[in-house]
Image (cartoon, rainbow, N blue to C red; front, side, top):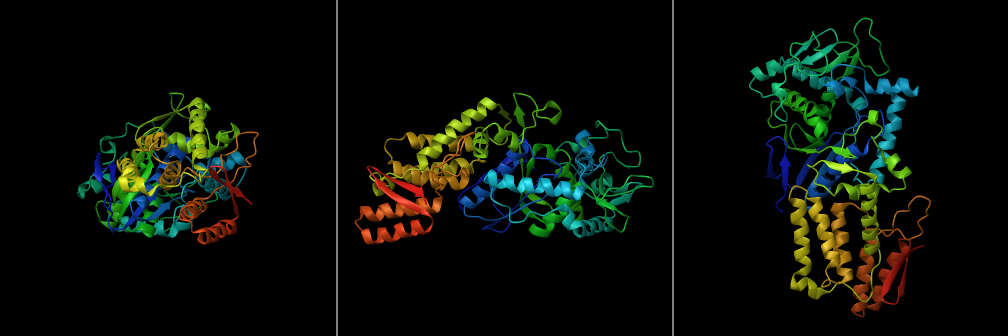
Length: 484
């Protein structure tokens, strides 16, 4: 397989990626907490996950991708430095929207699934919900309890970080949590033995308000903590050890170190995950993004301004995923201009400019193709990969059809829906054909047969195109594809 290099947050180094069981590769992504619309900062992380998946496949791996939906247990105190305090985020949204927690979760889960399609993110092989895996979470907590690494307080079952350390494990390798001793922004829970300890199971203490997501457990009625769900579901679908775990850099401080601790404690295997990949924050107008600031933009906000989600996807590629990216409406408009030009270039297939076998023999096309692979395999360097696309477009020594054919191949990584119609802007209806890649490939095949004067075979291919719902119109110097 080609040499793929990725930055591993665990080692803080760029390392060559090799899966545990090649040619298979397993990956888990921390998905949304389904209490609100994801922001464009969240979507940057989900596009990163999609990019990792596509690059693995581009390198010949058979991927298994899992992304969770957190629909219980993520407490509001996490924003203040302690994920074991505060109220359940869905409970808070439930009161605000006057819906049950179940209905809130369904509303935003459905929106997220629609967003995956809008952003052209390959659907994960498994999209598990925390509430569908309560049994697995309870069983995992039992394993940790049997290892002597839990204790009970008046509000829950907690993981004992100090005891974990005494067993020879190191807590907080992804971050500096091993140095934290209660200096967070929330008051220390006096019932916790160590400020770093975190809840595995929360139950309702006497007089505490209950909510409509609760389950029976060996420790009392309640609900799972935020961190335990990912360990339970990743183990179920990917095994006790797997290849890649992806999330935003905010999860590097508490959520992911806690996942590592509870999983390695339960299963006794190190490392729990071989590669940890974290995407950098998205800034807005040079500052932080926040709902209190009124700039936590969503896909709905993008679309209301007349932008297509693909404009946003293109915009993300302007910066390396480990570097902060500054969002402005002007920058998104510039990305839209470039993206629309790229789509226009790749949607028309010229007749008299077919892919030239001579170019392939002379090494021009393989050289470009190799450079693209080198760029994406260099820790997902999308700015360089996109720059190569435009270099190819400007190269007068390569035929237009060869350019289109190669760029459409690369779109397997870019995921920009190239070769199709331009997305409509606000107030505009797109009437241009939606050209799937398989139709474009058939068009190229037909023109190659026509060039070889194999007209009967070319007509058969034309019939295949028509059966897919498209019409071929041969004009002066170009072939145009019309949706029927």
